[in-house]
Each structure stands twice: as structure tokens, then as C-alpha cells.
Image (cartoon, rainbow, N blue to C red; front, side):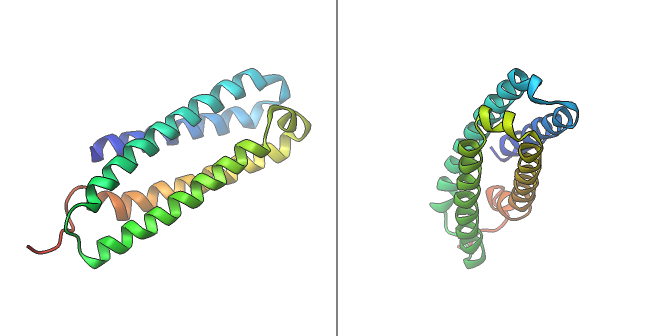
Length: 139
């Protein structure tokens, strides 16, 4: 399952990179493509979050070190914050708002992408080793 999560991260990174490249040369005329890509990313992100949550819930049922428990708590808080930030972004940047402030939208997208990249890197460093069973409580 950990490989699935890593594969998800790679796919999300690829989608973000393609979106950022599109944004570099696009404008409001490209809204149909922008909208299609936004929907595809949102779907991929939600699916990943569901898979990740299922794995984390399984992990919580195992005996873990205090450090592992702390990593899970921090992960949970970070995921809630990320989800809220992403949700606010989607609500704020309606197609009409994007059309009205293309430069602001592009800036907001790139900042959100940076935050998600940081989150995924942190998960790969702190959460994925737990999922691989590398940090279990001594029996």
C-alpha cells in the first residue's frame, strides 16, 4: 500500500507540474482546459486522501513508539490544515474570479502547489517509514 501512496504522490506532482506549465503561458481563454485539469486534480487528490486515511487508520491500530504516535498526530493536524487551505482555494477561485484576476489565481495556485509538495515530502520522510513497519513498538 505504501507504494500506492508514493505512486499517488508522483502522479499529483506530475499533475501540478503540468498545470504550472500550462499556467505560465495560458490566460482566461484557456478556462475549459484549466477547469478540466482542476477537476481531474481534485479527484486524484480526494482519492489519494481516502487511500492515505485508510492506511493511517490501520497503522493507528498497531502498537507504536511514542515518536510514531507523535508523527501520526502531526500528520493528522497537517492534513486537516492542508484540506482546509485547498477547500478555501477552490471556493475563492471560481471560474469568474479566475477570469477577473488571472495573475492572482496563478500566484495562488503556485503557492498552494508549494505547500502540497512540502506536505508530500514530509509524509514520505515521516509517515511512509511508519507505513512500511520500520518503527514499531518493541513487543
